[in-house]
Amino acid sequence: MGEMGKTLGLDELTDGATTITKALLAEFIGNLLLNLFGCGACVNVALGSTAAPDIVLIALAFGLAVFAIISAVGHISGGHVNPAVTIGLAATGGVKPVRAILYIIAQCAGAAAGSGLLKSFTPDRAAGNLSVTGLGTDVTQLQGFGIEFFLGFVLVFVVCGVCDANKPDSKATAPLAIGLTVTLGHLLAVDYTGSSMNPARSFGSAVVANVWDNHWIYWAGPIAGGVAAALIYVHGFSAPPPSNITPARYRPVAGDEKELKRLDGNNENIA
Image (cartoon, rainbow, N blue to C red; front, side, top):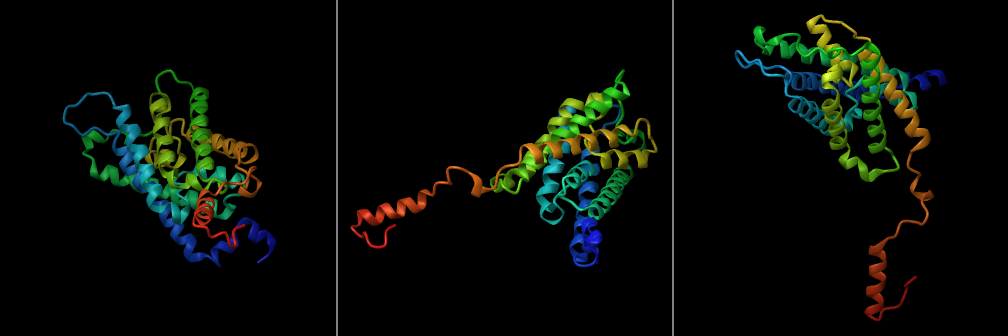
């Protein structure tokens, strides 16, 4: 396979076919669960209820869903579960183009499946539009785009930060940090745009409900914000390799062992 094929990532379809198949399945299931549980929190099945949507409940549902999904499948696919994350990482070379395209297809298919399941589980009287994302009262398209831009920006900025290869200590908390970032975005923006942050999430709801008003905002906004965040982080905020850190990291355990040897009167072979 030529250099162009390797650059595009075509080699992953042959050399790592099993690996990429598992990754695509992980992204499919991740988005299915996100739309099922996250969008499900937006639906009120209580008979005769006229209560306003509980923003905190919705924010926690989406954030906890992302936290759970990344914890479960992050080691398989990277736990993107969002085209804005995939395209942001692709813009900086973290994901090859072919893998990125396949991820987005799997993400959208999974989100549609999740919304489809939610519709089948929900009484017709309560289903409504199945939490299709839409602009709030008097929110213009430009304002909606701006909100979604910064929702995508903060999400991908945090993803880049916690997944920085030169910050291994932050990887253990990455699922929680990303999930809380999703919660943060929803706490701000549910009343503005429905707080998509995720083109696949909006696509899944729109397909099942067949409602496409202002749908372009939910693709253009998060993706533009995600690409901007990835480029800014990679070229301006990436952590330096450990070998470039001055002074060198202190190793207290080794120092303590040497001190114990001195106290024991054994001074042989002590550097």
